[in-house]
Picture 1 (cartoon, one colour):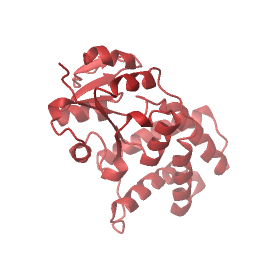
Picture 2 (cartoon, helix red, strand yellow):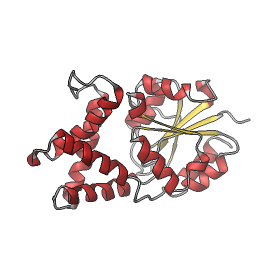
Picture 3 (cartoon, helix red, strand yellow):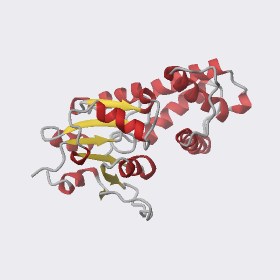
Length: 241
């Protein structure tokens, strides 16, 4: 008997190799800003970007009081990170908004599928409702899925920018569940590579999780995924499809 009816997949570094997508986009905006690209600069950007969004998740990034609606809030948050990272360039917020739009557009250009992603989804689609829950930009997510030819397996994509909250927050999951046909959390499984967003999100919201540990990392004691896999195709055996 199949326990789960709905599978929620993270996108970046779960179905799509996010490093290659981000590297391509970062090279494009570096050129646009007249900055020489180096692997060291890219490494610094990745670390900064992760820390920046963790700051947002922890309510540590102040937003001007004049910004009220959700769309403007997300625009500011995404643009502000470029202003902070390239602070030596003294970029205007308008320029940073333009750079962010270019960056998000380019995220969907160089797409590399995680090994086994298309095979897994094609084999799961007839038995499960499949959704994407991502903290990345929605348009970029849709473009990635389309380019990787994974979009036909997915019923819907929910991103943090449309919710106003990111994984692992309860508000993100409430929004996601409202979009689903299945409402019972016991019939859902969340699959993702991130302990702090995917696994913790599942733990905090009473949803079973599968940690995609493709880097073969040691599991810290504070995290309790329901399952752990090192390769995507192992998921079929874990859920006893």
